[in-house]
Length: 561
Image (cartoon, rainbow, N blue to C red):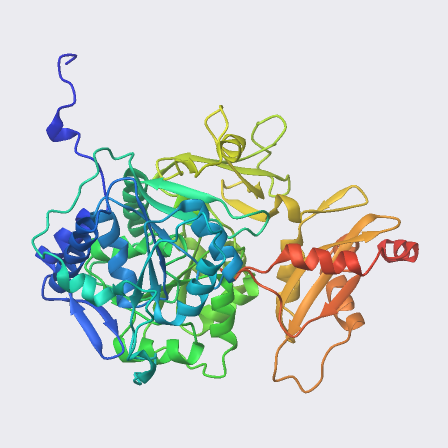
């Protein structure tokens, strides 16, 4: 068989963009998007994306160019996920929660030819552009007008368009050719998206993904979560966050209905679930916490599948969420993988276990998905796998098709995490259990070293989340004169409390459930914990606060006895 070699017919580049074309054929008359009183079918969405790609091509945007977007989860944002790369350009979704200075830095770094701006992000975008130096040309600005708020009300303030915008999104779509032949990638390794990391431990970096990687990630995500054909998917996860973990393209592959919502609000989510018969949604653990603590809590009429990732979810939060009728699946991924590449693959026999034990098992990140070649926890010095004992800490490493091409304009950072041994080093600290399931314990910078012991802040946080009065919890290191570092807990309390616990109450609660060296020596109460633009707790900010408290005194050595 040596004479048989790959031919053009068998070497056509993988790309997720073809999912939309197929959806228009198979699900053409089915609803693709719902947003307030607006709805589209898959045929209409396909046509509008082609028109958008056509208009972008007509103004000279194409292969190798970057097109950025600042938008919430509205129909235009979904269409842009297809329309921009269908023109041959590289899509860059920018987090709407960032400040103007950071947005300006990102725009200057990726140098987009055009920037789509959602109505609610006008002032943010214009301020970011105003920070450009005189010798730096800003991108063309296109305004995405949205004349409805999430309650369906009209917004009359949109009658005029700022002169700094060259046109509106709808006018760009209207001018496009619905029969446009979209630009297929010359190679499946060609870039399709550029996403910036959240910058929880360092400055944001520009992650570049290929058509091949995103195709693999999308198909893998649908299989691993067992997404059926024609689900009703509620967009509680921002599309700017790793392109909605690649479910923007995935919903086209299965002909799903995309229910768009501008901003997360627990009461709105419960209302939309009931109104549209939502079957699937995604969100970080903070979303689960808000849903399970909402005053609008009502048992769901039908089970809703919810996929969570982004931070280790406390078992207590998982348990509360599932008690409402949500079926929680848990996974792990990074901006650098384009979506979730490790998941807590559930075993039927675990359903017979008590609820607390089920929640504990589900809090683990799990095993590699079928699209990821290998995943391991290794000693960062030797590179060897750690013991499968559930306690030996190591760094989580990955390799597979969906790992990024690299960081834009940053070869040093690329080489640092993508080493010559063929592994991508995530910077996350974890353990491997005896059954082959991995569990994250911390970011490498968040491990607390107290008296020579490596202490996982995540384990302490899991105990704190079980306290009936605590709404949010985060644990960081505080300098200590004797132990070097000791755990410092920052907590916010639930609003409906009639009697609030004291610092000693919290410490005693932890002392009854944790080894003494893991018990927080300091508890700081906050109205709300500081978070990154993607909803993760800003531990670097909390570390600064803990450091500002000064070293705890040597008397704290007695509390270790």
